[in-house]
Length: 361
Image (tube, rainbow, N blue to C red; front, side, top):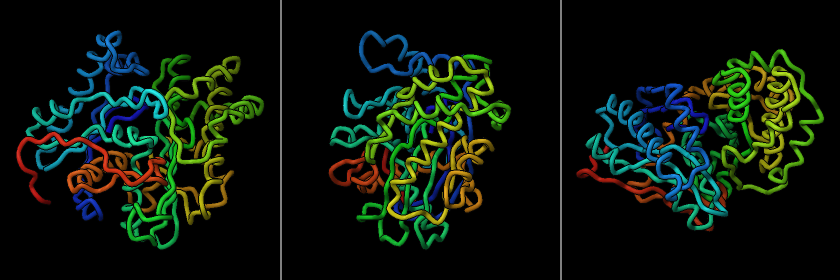
């Protein structure tokens, strides 16, 4: 998995039949250099059209090379789920664009690769995101949850999955509700990058020194996205207005206010849960931000805890999810449905790039 935060590539081994998680394996991480990050950042928002060819070729080279370097360290993997790098996402318009070539990756690794997970869902009228919810359902079963729980991924964009583990399968009616809550780390990363040359507000240190400016927060919450019913999804840069709202603020106040915006977006999203979850399990980089976590805990009625408290790996959950989804694609099973992406019926996304027969796990 290479997410919208543009920090690097995560890889995680998982043994699964596509329905249950049998075993978690080792993990790895390959960070992007600052030069690589600049190449990828230049390609954000680019669609695969001729005028973007040069920028996309450079970004593709970075994406493929980084994934090959990391995945070569996992020779025991029988099947690879390759998400690619999201550059643009406009499901009700031009579609969705994850940069990457699964066929070239399969050839380089000499292993079958499942890729292009989102296009089929979008083509059939779905949002194409979020895609981790079917995996979250398996995680809820794995940790022995007996009542509804919610997973909150705080990556570049925030997304929420409400899970009822009492249901038999993720595609069962009432088993899942999932949607993007709003921006999370991406705009904060952009802020500290633009002003201070940093890649993130590490441990929320800058936000902790600032004050939340209520006027900017209120203007943010007037955005029409929050009035839409889920399922719904966002592009990384859909809320670029956030930077404008804090333009006149000090660095610390801007960071505190943008952190409060991300937390408030989650609070708005939690109102859509069919019944309150037993707890909110937080994954992604945002769980390392104590200011963000404190804001969520203060504003929500349920316990807000990192997924590690449930025995899961919050840094690798997304990477595990695409390994899990790859097996579902190989099995011919759905990877998204009406309650997760708004697609009319459960659909199996993903293309299979084969280099021989898949060995059963």
